[in-house]
Image (cartoon, rainbow, N blue to C red; front, side, top):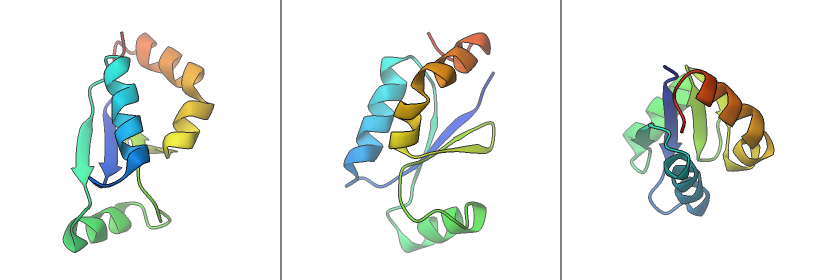
Length: 87
């Protein structure tokens, strides 16, 4: 099964859209809220080039943000369905 993680902030519109997209397609994910300085620092240690949220990872590999998610939507859905991670 594919492990999906999303780094988010509660006030982020694109984060809400990314989470809604995941829910719409039946994809389980782990959310990391980086609203606090400590959590943001943890994200920066793992993803040093990240400057914005959301940051979406699949099996530890960075996909990108919401725009990238939508750009490669069909290919990502096919991969997730093949792995049994999407409906």
